[in-house]
Image 1 (cartoon, rainbow, N blue to C red):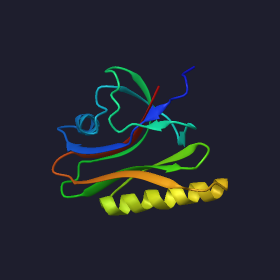
Image 2 (cartoon, helix red, strand yellow):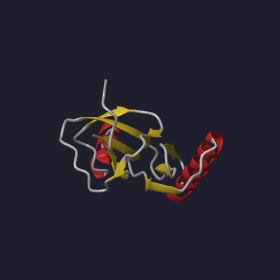
Image 3 (cartoon, rainbow, N blue to C red):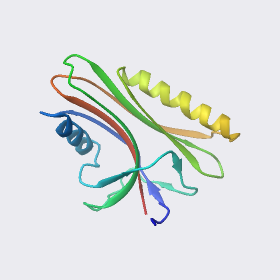
Length: 152
């Protein structure tokens, strides 16, 4: 069993590659999370977790991460990914991920709307949001990724 994470950051990156996997790997590198092992998790930020935008995670670490991504091999197609964290004043936070064939602004708006709905559904007050979004026009094989790595 993993301990409850105490720190997090929010990131996004996009890139090209010669294959779908290398495009994904290159986007991970651009997002500063290409040399860690992601353990995909769902959407809850632990109570009291501290935002640390300069967080350095040791290479090879197993890292719980909420993320969304999209890969396309359609030249000229615009793709986007976004992730957001909704924060309450006194309890846990909610993380939402999005990816699609759209602009950065559309992805950002989708995250805003999802965070508002998630807090409304839970009957919680949304006091702050942190959102990262990125878009990319595919040249050959492109990937957009947005993520919230959680650390100890």
